[in-house]
Length: 115
Length: 110
Image 1: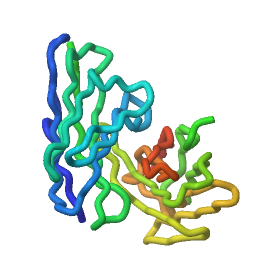
Image 2: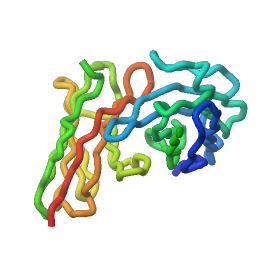
Image 3: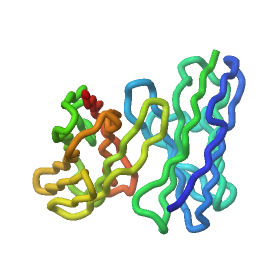
Image 4: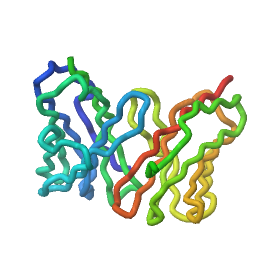
């Protein structure tokens, strides 16, 4: 099945700095990447949807200037958390919807801790 | 009303028993339904998907869908301690987005 490579798996950063998370699809038929955030003991909350070469679509309540999503190539989507604060500490997961697999394939997730 | 609702649990069953996990959804236009298993600190892994009303079986797992009642369930037969995890119900609605329930924590006791 389709595979999504996500890194880093874990990052600790200082408050005010920016962090970039990358998700690389190994399925060249993939078109759409979804970005989720999960707080402890809570479910996955969809943040935004990105497609190659177009602007990401953000869910209500998600600050697009804070969570920058770039999907410049078919296989690479990035999420940059800008000016991170402790409340941004969370588990960030990407997921792709691929024509070659049922449903969605998830990256391994990134644990972000802002100190 | 939440788009996808699950009882957060924990649901505790003895080893070898049947675990029954339930989920309701609000978007009548939803077409695809998924059950994911998530271990602590890990990303979700797909267990089952179901598109049509009725039952779908895969090994020890059975997914049940009732679109009229907007209800989907997952049965786990012969539950094992290794099945202990959080089970996430996810629904692909009419917008094409995959929306998750809050998850049900399952504990299988030896």
